Length: 209
Image (cartoon, rainbow, N blue to C red):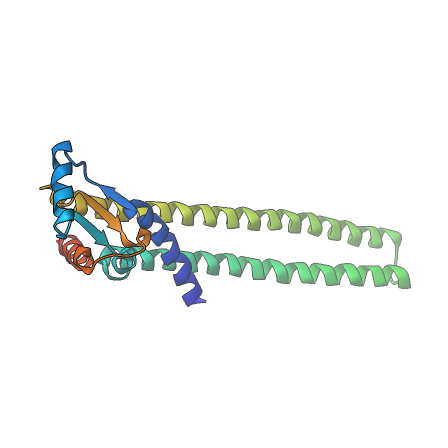
């Protein structure tokens, strides 16, 4: 179960950061276009960098802590919901048995008076209404826990996105890279363009402060 939950949480965070790093554009002055073409013609590395999103999710402390926090929240919500659902199921099964016993007594003429039978029937009808209300409360709780989890996920994902984007902006303040890409969008790449380790080291160093 924990592996499944971890996969769900990691997928959620991955979706958020991939949206950020699909393309991180740095505005390139028009007079640099010829420079880029010249560099490419000479077979040298162009002012482009590639970042591996999966590695950031695995090794950036903030991403790891965010994933753990989401997982803990998800597990806590599921335990709370499961506990109430089990209690409701047990109460509902008891009610079903009471209804069955009532029907058997009516068929066997076991009630001493009509008033006694009507009183038991009224009790069962009231219990049924109470169970219907509890069932609705359980559904409301499920929706509330789901909304709370999604809000927490959105906040943590946004924090992660802001952190990575801010670091890349500061790291590239001199405009050295004209384009920073997530390698998930690339079909092929040259190793010299990958700055993932440098980015992770910088992110963690900044986060540690």
